[in-house]
Image (cartoon, rainbow, N blue to C red; front, side):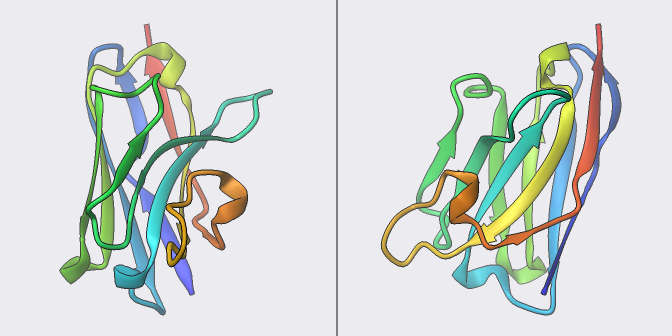
Length: 124
């Protein structure tokens, strides 16, 4: 069971990046997927989550209207389109998989499988 996050990089403020979270060893169809980020000296926070069905999504207030989460189960991949990036979006971004049989998970502890993280740096 492995999640691979990719797509991070250095971008100027106002720019865009698309992060990908690809799964190997299992299918993402039955899992909610969350994107989390952790900046130096800060706690890991939820950025955006999508339910296993794709019908429900969550966005933190800080990214609402700028980020879009989507999933392509045929490719076993979840995406995070990030637009209008700000310096405060700078962090290591992680994707994680969790079950949503009873509740749509948002908190990090509700997720079971984690990718290795990809660094996003937004310059001012």
